[in-house]
Image 1 (cartoon, helix red, strand yellow):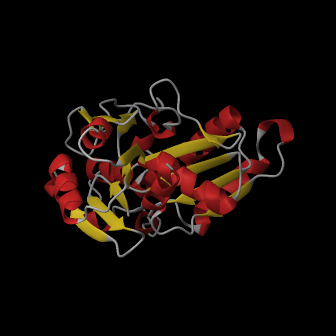
Image 2: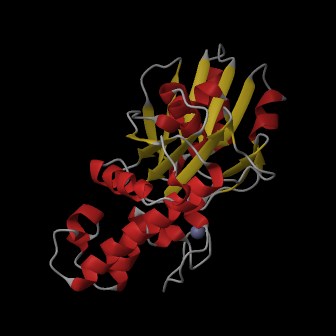
Length: 269
Ligand SMILES: [Zn+2]
C-alpha cells in the first residue's frame, strides 16, 4: 500500500493507493501522531510520499512560512520504527515532477500562483535542488520594497506584488473594498489605485518570467494555481516571450491540467 500526503498551508490531503482524497484542516494535524495512527489502522502501508509547503531536506522538515512546524526528521522517525520507506519533498518540487511526467519535458518550469508565488525547475530531466534544497524560489527574490512584510520576513519579495496574498495586502493597504481583493475583480474597477495594483502584478510577473527564463532556459512553462491558471496570464507571458533577449524560440506555455499536482508528484519521489 502507498500513502500519499499533501501538507499545504491550509489543507492537509491524503489518499491510500490512489483512492479517494481525504481533506483536513492543516492546523489540526500533528504529523507524527497522524502517521502513527494511519499506519496502525493500515499495517500494509509500505511507502509514504509527502509533499510539504515549506523547506525540507533529506527527509527533515526545516521550516514553513504557513504551517506551524519545528525541525522534524520525519523520514528517520518513520523508517526507524516501521518497515516503510518515506520520502518528503517541497510541494512545488513535487508538482514539477508531476508536470514533467505529463508534459514529457526535460527542461520544465512551473509557476503556481495562488496565495503565494511558487516555482520549481527541472533541468536535464532532474529537479534543480541546490545545496539547501531551496533553489527556484522566484517568489522570494528581492524585487521592490513594499509597506508590509512577506511571510518569509522580508519586505521586498516579488510575491508581495505577484500573488493572491500580495494583491490582498495592497488592497487592504489602499482601502479597497473587500469584495474586490482579487486580480479579476480589481480589473473591473474604474479606479487608478486598482489599475496600479493590477499593473504591478503583471510587471512582477514579467520580471519573474524573464529572470527565470534567463537563469534556466526551459522549453515548457506550466501555469497553475487559482491566480496563475488562466488564459489571460498565458497570453500575457506569450507576448512577453516575443520581447525576450537573444531571440529565443520554441517555448511552450501551458495551463496545468492536474487537479492535485503536488499530491500527484509524491508518486515520483
Ligand atoms: Zn518572501
